[in-house]
Image (tube, rainbow, N blue to C red; front, side):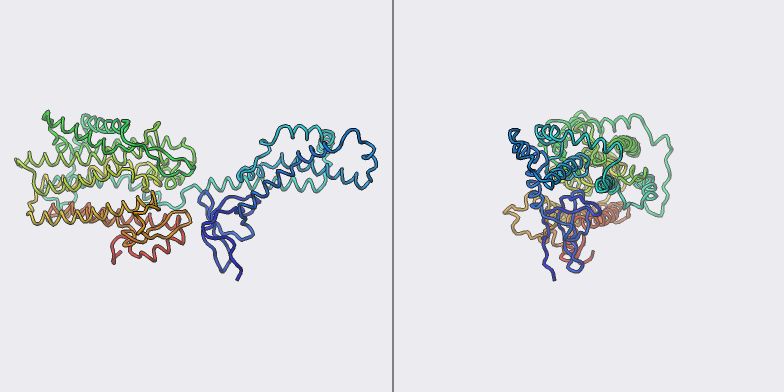
Length: 608
């Protein structure tokens, strides 16, 4: 069996199939049967190459030095220096064969000069490998070469005029033309490869249906909670009058809330960090001040309560606020899609660049839409919806006390508010961790995230608190203690798993993480196989589901409606997990298959 020349992870120069161009690639694997290397180009393209199509980088550096020492300009310069004007006799005694060699050498020099000027693909290859192109050569040597070869260049022009070129030169011209076509074809292939080919969410038809289904689901849940008997047997709930769903004042309050959070995010407080590298190598900067924005919001709400502002206004107009948020998210999504049409190709989302209007509108066409330094996706991800969730819960607590004439909120309401407050504060305190999530690195900002951040999170995640206002549930202290322990277990799994992952990504060589074992990958990253990530593949999702169950249990078991969030959360995380599996398999290849063999369970140990 032949010996393998290149090792996994080695950076070499790979020839693009069908061309003479070499690009920097990384070896990912080797097939002992076919003797082919699987290599990965910088744009993420993976191809199988023969060993003859792969060369080490050192050989290219050697060629560079060799070509620079024997360039046409240096040959002509050295020849002109060696031939002194005072030595004509010796030159005349040259034989006829030497004269012919001299003419052939001149003609070869002319051809090399023309090829250097006519080969744009070769110049591009040299520039890629670090070699100077024709525009970067020494100006003095070019002038000397032009003066030396001026008579021969005149002959070349005559030959060109009467098409008296040799067949060999015509063949070379054809090769240059074919190389130009190959280079243009490669550009076209690279542009086409950036298009989204695998459509999610049911493709064009599925995303079109979701644009209507998601708002309808939110309104259905809120209408069911308003009923005295929110049973599934009472479907459909009575529809309110259309004029009762919209109020200009409510929409104005929503806009005030949105722009107040935008103002807080622009304050020059908190550290500035860099996100992950984009496809063009650029890293965007983000200001981490979500926790400060939460404190400022708490101070503003406290001031309103001090001046006896009735915060339960939110409960009384809850459906109108949901309609206002949905309308605003739709307008925002339309604006995002229109502006994305002018965005450069390398700023489009890898998951929302299909070319289909409805699909790209739903998933998001542009990856990181910004107005100056204000990142719209990053802002909506954590600020207006997540902090608004806490404010809505507080409004439900005050509404419960007012409607039922209570001096203290119920124990169930206190548990729901406390558990969800902990979740939001944790997200804002660890705000930097969101920069590595799929929402930021892969998904564009379109209707899916805009509606999810501004409508689904604040109005569906607060479903338990909204339900308890109209359907109070009494629980005992021992039951409350058991539910609290369950929530703490889920939170511990969620937080410790995320901390392990984030710390390992930042500094794998940290001595504190020496106990963690991992599988190396071709991308330079490692896949953890010990700790929480060696227990199941997505332990953070397991913690999420346990916490979601703890949030619903204080509502009792009279109706399934409060447990919608648990059912939805399980479905959502299983869908997200399937997306993660697909992307990780593409990204890590054989290393991901080894990881799946080592860690067979996805979310639930010994089950799934």
